Image 1 (cartoon, helix red, strand yellow):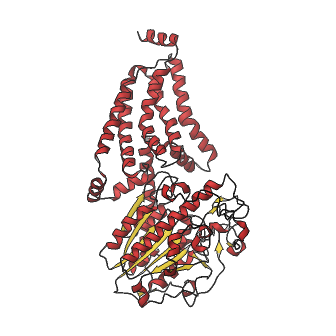
Image 2: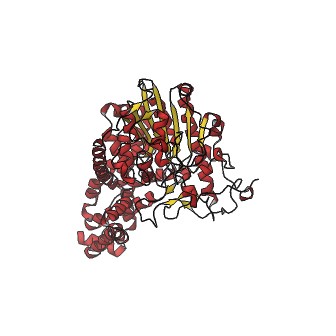
Image 3: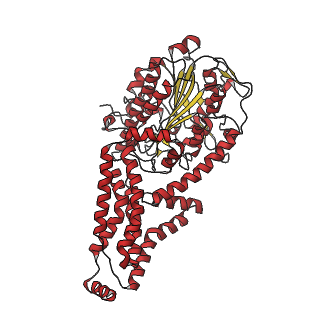
Length: 580
């Protein structure tokens, strides 16, 4: 009878409709979340495309064992359904894609915190959506039927599917990668958007990054404390805040003279701010820059971040309760160092658990946890707020209400029509960043604290700014000034000004590298210790100007550090922009 069915199916031709129902069933569990991600503009198209191709893998066993189609589909479908419920539910609540960061947060949160989250975000419509999601999956399963091919053809078709979906991409990554570890990592990224690989890859990467982070934390715990630390403000209530931006080039801020009004709120606060206009970052990448910015490491001694305390450890040693609020991705291979810094704090708030960096995520999310930290009853607090800032892709960094710059007014003449949307979206991202940073300053001021808030960006970004208007992003091998010029400003409360010297009028144009931030921070905070170098403090009377060196300190002299003065930007000429 089975042979008769096969022969009949072969005679009538291949059952493409049945094959289509099979594919639709397996695609549904990954595709519905990816479709929502597309429709809401949460991320790009790559996840949708990858999930589409990976879903075809389950067709192979259907072709090999057609008599067991319903049973196999049910067994595989239950696993896919369970994984899809987790990823879909997470998207409903957070509008983010499931990743290893989510697993990290789940394991880091206690039962009480989990209960609070469930209560805060529970909605009846989510239950109804889950029921509808399950019901439609069952409906698709009822439409499934065997798709018969002659045995040889079914084996050949199944092998071709596995080869196309898994074999070829894996071999391609091995051939184009520097090593097997990189190839596996790229291949995992390719299959990750589809369930159940989303959970499997996320858990594997979570355990790998957790091991790396635990190793870093163990090493950090063995670093000796600062010698002879003294605090001029010991015993006094104080709240000090460090806001770290991302990818923001000060040349695109009206606060620093940019013709477009990209920082209207900070412009209004200018009289209350100490705005330093000659500060650069040592490196144009977040991790490499912050290894120096947040520790005693610098371009001459890049490995000191492994041997000396971070700014969080310094403040804890001084008796401050420490907080780390971040909108950066949490547990990724690149961000493990940042998570290590954050885990040194007493309390952490992780807001961005997206799988993909190029996903919609707004920094306004930091305002609520920041207010909560400010309201904490601790007398001495040190709060770090790490923003996603103006990180690429820029259109994902601001809500539609901040889509202000859409034409050529104020745009350099050399920017082409094709480049204009990207150029404008970066300015809109700067505009929203202005709203977030100014809101942090205003919220800080409202609490009437005794202390100060300092804001700087980790690095800049060249968005068709440099000569030729052809560079987009950051490339240490081909440095341009916008990659390194960063905003650097501070606000002090009236209480702090009453008891501290906060007149920096003569210091605002000093040439300075953020690699020496920890010395400036200690000076502002009233801390002293044997490792403190007065000459590296931007606000010290003993400040000594030094060449501003940029580049990779681990490269050879010919390719490594260079003097920033060699690429320092010139003043913008009036005829370089279109003023309508």
